[in-house]
Length: 143
Length: 68
View 1 (tube, one colour):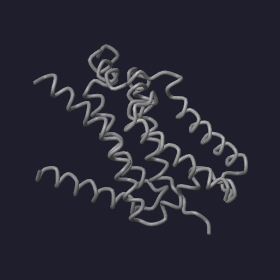
View 2 (tube, rainbow over the protein chains, first blue to last red; view 1 turned 90 degrees about the horizontal axis):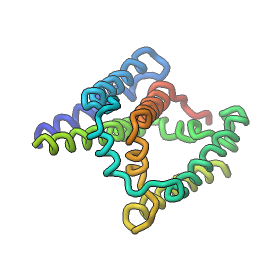
View 3 (spheres, chains in turn cyan, green; view 1 turned 45 degrees about the horizontal axis):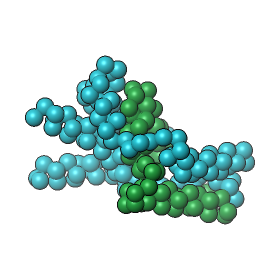
């Protein structure tokens, strides 16, 4: 429990630091690169990029539930709607206030430091979550 | 303004689909199951990882403040 608390505090502290750095600077790119490289390295170490690892393929297959083109139709409709709005927004120059792109819309959530920190932490969790589940699954098989 | 409503509607629809998929016996998969379906193949895993990297880079290293 103590270890988890330390990790959580470190993650939030890193998120606070990274989101306080000005964008489009080499420091901001470097700070984003750190968790990115760690994630890629950890996935590679788990064998996620190896074609011969049928255990990983079977693991992901077990987590899908009869996914088919017809079953994902609602998601496809949402995706189509998003793509349409994005294309129209980009066709209007990308900075239109009447038809903003997703990026322009999300920019409002990035105005304050604490908002960026929350989003950054969510982004880290989205990357770490699947990796954690994969690691747990592999530990369970080994035990 | 209408496009903002459009984005909000899409977000609401996504939330609704996710909740229904998780708590009702529908054929629609959750986002996690959709991701797992993509991840059954190595190119799918690479695409998902690249998407995550792109989101992080675009949101936190290349963001701009909105004009008021």
